[in-house]
Image (cartoon, rainbow, N blue to C red):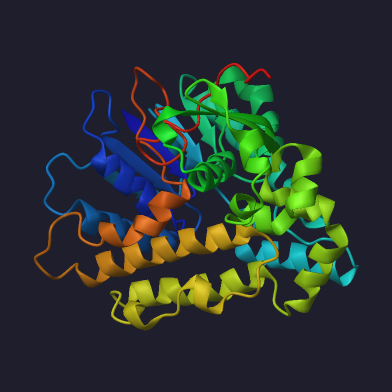
Length: 377
């Protein structure tokens, strides 16, 4: 099966490839095409993936191109994860909004609207090209604002586009940890879409245990959303809000925190990732001395940003370790253990099989998040 990654020079692509390397089931991905507009980033990520594959004879073949038609030809799945105008565009969105005293954030508020207006036309054009070049392919959208982009693409692709988001899974996992519950035996009742949603039920052994969590002050304070929203607010809602709802419920506080940070998250990431790609170009020799996102990032107004920091740190460690080991005799999975914090965050994407289309949109082997009937009370 052939997978095309649009945005193939992206920071986290090696972690997707890692999931594909681990897949040995029937219908696994055997060929990956990386597409990006930046040939230097394509080359850098391509080297990392080659090092990850090592001598594994079953590793998915990887090719790279800057030509969209070439990338889409014969694709079975298209993973759409792009950032129109890059991190520089995001930094501008955030700063312009904050200078006007309103929220500048990637998917929420004025910043999110600007990002959507810039991204939707590109997504529509990609959808049209997929329909022309690879009409039988399934598109998996991970480009923000995910709901807006997926809906726009659906006008041209119908049911063959699926929008995914790891935030509901991440929230569910944190709540299950606070409850001491096994994800394999739990069902989550999450209402809403992507960043706009609420966890309103947690079924364990046929019983909704969320009311017990809401009654336990210490348990509520043991995870990020409980501390962020506060016990009284969560109990009034009767549900656990997605962390991005902080920007709505506490808008003034969020804007004040973003303005006080001095540097927006987009500006920080632009600087950090620019430096990191330069280090990667040098063969990873200076990677080990680079500061991770958690050590130097501006203060995050939401646990969503702190979760993203952990993912980026996992991606950085994996890529550094892989780059540094290129000229040494190491196992083909060298450095993968260092991405454990990333795997636990809930974003690691599964390899997809023909029989199931998509095995999961969260960490491999999780039984915590299923689509099904809501829990009734």
